[in-house]
Length: 65
Image (cartoon, rainbow, N blue to C red; front, side, top):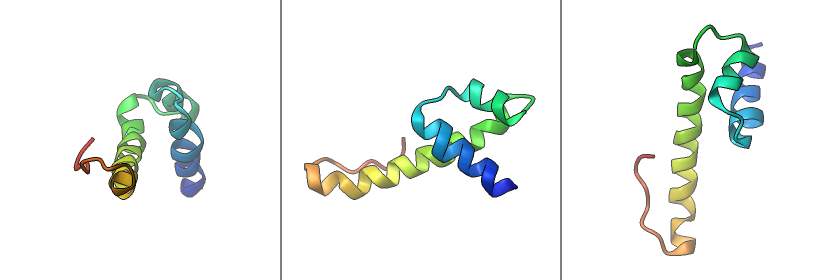
């Protein structure tokens, strides 16, 4: 069940710009602090992707978003 919730939170909602507060409510969290874990994962993923494509667009790699 946790993998389904994790996938829903990261791949389906946060990756499609659903507000953190709304994701929190969808998951039944009592506060957004619990949901911020998923947002952190998304930020890490975004940073990795930016570093990966930086040479293609001649950009300086990002180390932290």
